[in-house]
Image (tube, rainbow, N blue to C red; front, side, top):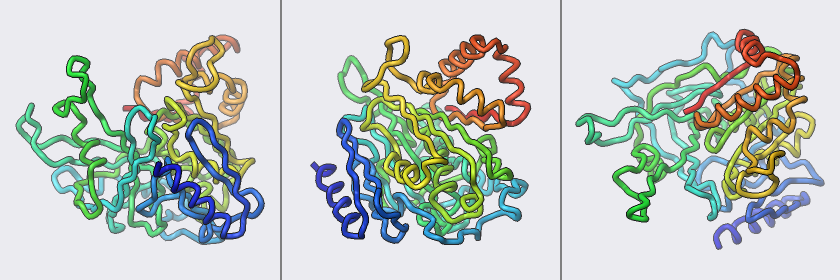
Length: 376
């Protein structure tokens, strides 16, 4: 019921600001886009992810002619100063929870939360990096504190409020269903994910990092094409990419002339993550952003008549993807590690159909730095 009430209110608010709103409904999933007048970030209502009211500094933003450069390298594309392991395990940073929002609809198989953390500007990071979270408590199996859990960062270095003081994580609550008990077994639930999803504003959180350079964006050439392939919460770093390219007035946004192409695999439309944001960026940048979703339990089947997974969706555009890779595009993969065998099998089959040797093709991409993988 909440989803049915809040979104119409958001739409009414949008209309009141002077631009026409088009509402599209698809299997309980809603998104809206401005169609007759380009809204500025100051008039654009915050998007209610999955129909849930936004309680923190999240939601779609637009550059609105702003200049956002106080966290940039000089030149902005120079990666020599990327922050790495500013906070270490023995001396973690203490941040505070700003907000926790459920992001998925009622029919989604599982709960995913948008978690915003205040780091006061003292734990800087770049798009594509990860934070490590140290959950409280003692691991009963090891009789010592729980180890670190890594989470890909879903915001730009400026944070969702553009002040450079917050970080956003995209967290799936890990539960274990016991078929004998026919109930979730709390003893086997994910410690850190449940800790984060149950957090309240003001709660303290121990963080280490940031870590990782594998998923950084090479920004020196503003015409670079980025192909992003994700399953579930693997969309997190790519949400940061899209905000940097299309949602902020940073130097990369002002210079960008390339194409960003997102492939996202989810179970159903209620499980789509950040789609409302992405649709707004696409409506404002139709020549620079493409979105293709593989929804395995709904909609179209793959060419073999089976469920549509993300590798099947990429295969539909194999000729374009391979052509872009031949011309220097960068391809990124993020999500559960189980996604990669299916993707690599698909790419190998495409290579064979084109008379290419998959291992040689992949080696060439890796050598050129065009192949980026971070799975968990």
